[in-house]
Length: 418
Image (cartoon, rainbow, N blue to C red; front, side, top):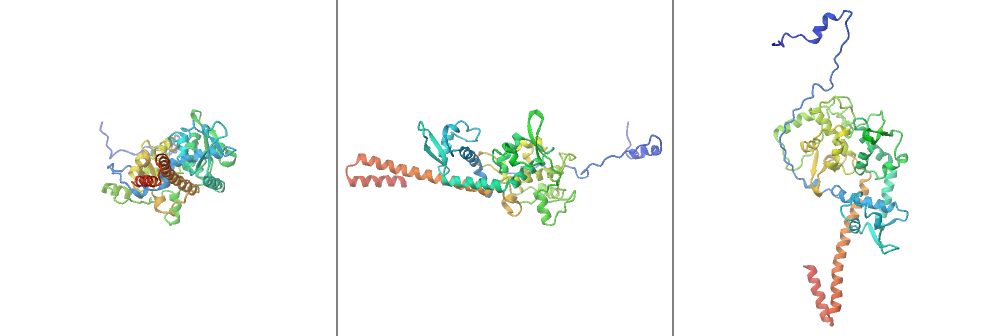
């Protein structure tokens, strides 16, 4: 049967004769938020990755992988009442502490941080912190104490971006490093949490942390737009993302046109409800990009290993191919492939110093990294001195004459110079 769309009646016209009958009822079809802009117009064109030496050379980002086990071992030492531990106390915790090799060998790689000495019994190696490392540790504890509310606020914001304002403890534990919180943060709820936090039982027997807050939370994007007078805080307002193109990066014309229209779409805060959004629409894409921007803005280095973000999909309502968002927006995110991993970097944090405030713990981590670099100098000097020492010992045994001894020393020096 053919259906004539031109002569078809609407639902309202069909119900009009019954408006005044005893069977009349009020029926209102609810409006769908953003229904007039929920479309998907992205052009799926391959975008070639462009290397940018500036982001690949940010030291505290790419040294973070080595720094994490260093701080973990440092904490094991400082937590001991004597301030020193035998190697047996940590030798079997390498996997737990993210140590990439044998723990003893790793500790000896950083003599500027860990000082080795012979223990009181059985000649076992013991380790304690050097004076410089102990001073940085005290500075780190002062930052945790003075910036307690700032650090707690970052965790609160992260949980408020979830679908139900709750996050499993095991996921929070995995994000503590990025949030700049100590590894034992969840073990002391009385001193670290206020009344807005509450522990709950979740599905699958998991324990979670829920945040109860009625205050409106503004994202970094909203705050910056308000400062510039480009945003009044109303619904359905458009906020344009700041773009920072890398040198030599050229986008296809179709993608540039799509980005131009993408910037005009309303900005949906990562703290607002997004259940009415079509996950395949462009506005859902803009909400996703806004979420990733806010999340990286909360982190210490404004960066994270991309694979570590995949565990957030379920609880934050992220699409299955969330990693594609980083590739579709190279003007906002940079993918670095140093250290045999893929790290996501928020470009704005390193191109506009006034846009995103520095994390309070970043200064301390930079001090640790500087101390780690000094270890390389110490080890290099030890190797050089060891070679000269070996040459001297050999000469004392083989030569009976002062002239021969000087000749042999000259030969050793020339070998070292070569």
